[in-house]
Structures are given as C-alpha cells and as structure tokens.
Length: 224
Image 1: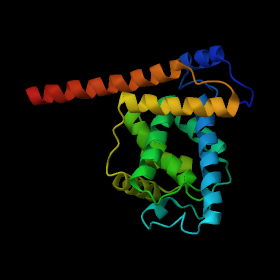
Image 2: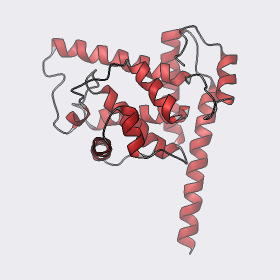
Image 3: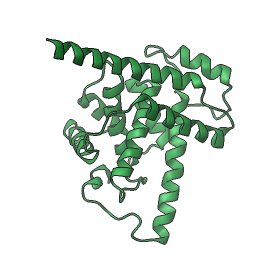
Image 4: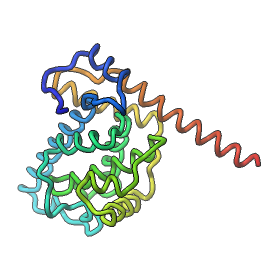
C-alpha cells in the first residue's frame, strides 16, 4: 500500500480522487506523500537551525506533551500510511490537520516540529481534523491503538492540543483552499506534478456542505 515514487499524471490523480473508497484497499492518497515531504523538510530545517542557535528549540513545558521519548520505528510517510490504512481518513482530513499544525506553530512561536514530536502531533491533529471534516469517526481509543498510545495518553494529547490552539479549530473554505495551494506548490517542488484542482474542489465541497448543515441546524434551533 506504499506510495510509488514515480510521478503521478493529472489524469491518474483525477481518477484516484473520484474513485476514492473507504472500503477498498485503495492506494494511499497523494496528499499523504506531500505532507510527509513537507514535514521532513521542516524538521531538517528546524534541527539545522537548532545546531547553530541553542535557543531555537527552546522548550515550552506545555508543547512538550507531544515529545515522544520512545519514538515509533516508522518514517513520517510510513506513520501517515498506517493512520490511513486503519482509519481510512479521506484527503480533506490531512489538509485540515496541516492547517492545525501550522496554526499551532503560529499561536505558539517557540514550538518547533522535530523528529521527537512529529508522530504524536500527527496522530493528534489527524484525529481532531477527522472530527471536524467527517460525519463518522473512530473513538479516541481506536486512534490511540493506531498511534501506539493508551487511551488516557490520547485523551490528554487531544485536551492539551485544544488548549494550545485556544479552541480555534474552524477552517473556512478560503483557508482550506490556500493550504491546498501551498501543498500544490510543495508537490511541484518535490515531484514535478501538481495536486489537481479536483482535490481542492472536492475537499472544499465537503467542508462547505458540512458548514451549510451546521448553519441550517443552528438556524432551526434559533427558530424554535
């Protein structure tokens, strides 16, 4: 189920996106490879800066919650593929998780993504993003097993993440699209092919539909 290193044509990507199934043994969504590449480069840059500036990776006791003292024997790509294999979270979930990661770094400027915290950060943001994007979700206890954690650890990571984010979890369509564009540029740098607009429009429609449902529900409640 690993992703191929060969360039993916727009036609093949379009076909994969439209035929994406939660049931079949589908190939790993392209966005997973893109996100893994982006995070790996970010970690290399952060750790290179840290070697030159001892203060660059200053420890915030609250963000230390993501540090993994017994790191999984998995690359970022393999860890993301494992999450996909067992949760079948769709492509929009990974885009929203990326938004959350970037937002976390902006809200907490001293926080840096490293090889010590990236795995716990990913399982947490993907779990929270799946609750925002998808109608049906696995319980925290299931995500805990996927991430090699206890349920208590998973619950604690989620709670700490929510407070670190100031509960700012809403992602509107324009923000979503801007992050898709950034991932598209990442693909262009790394592989010479682009994430199709199909991905952006498909994912944006899913989130737009969810927002409309929430607005209709809130309106009906206020009318009663």
